[in-house]
Image 1 (cartoon, rainbow, N blue to C red):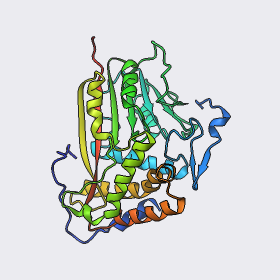
Image 2: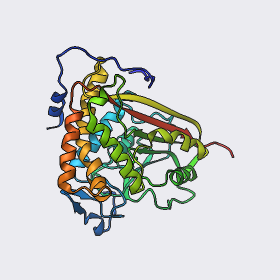
Image 3: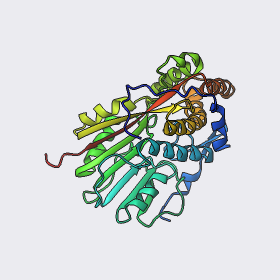
Image 4: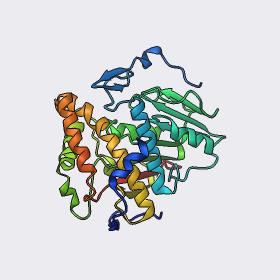
Length: 329
């Protein structure tokens, strides 16, 4: 699929041979860790990281890991099943994937770049015990001071779906800048935590409209704003990066688009967002907005109903932002 103009409307499939609800059927050792890292915390029936307890509002249990792997597929689809858009040099020596999650992106990059050292870091030790020999996982907090030495600079640094988990993006960009080789690249792949429609049908999903407002307020109060994807290009420029691009794709939620690839993406995106409602909502609503667990679950059920309304032509925007550290200066 060619790069979309994000101002263009997605053509709607007016046929009646596809149902939004059919999408639900699609989804029915190189580590050294202190034992305390695996002493997970449990809250409202979900499991959360123990390292830097409470700093990250999303769970890390098996259900969440499956969601993250589905997101991996979704981010690849708009860019031709690729892992990245930045011009990563074929002779890259070191690549960092911060917030690696299940490690699936890092593992696939290690297979694609067998002579490159791939490092994945995360708060949670949820990566597989097996990995290509050039892929290494470490437990680390990307918001801490980076401790890589002067001879450990990276050629490419990647982060994906970190929105809602970063308090100080300016500091993060500075650390990325400082740990890239001159001429090296950074790439952030993020979706907006905001849902759109071009034909006004979002208004037929009032709980979704209320939900995204509440998520926005709660994430700001938590100190890690969720809906930041549209601001990251300028932050990257302000940090000193050059050749900065923000490629934006519209991803339908549900199979309502006429284009076959967009229809396929829409099915997966619908499954993904239905799976995302609880991890996005539960901790922020109960910790910050003071919902009870029962109140939050009742609210989330209404959100899922609205998201599954086939009359609503909803979509999200996915951003692929990359920039280069200057070769001189």
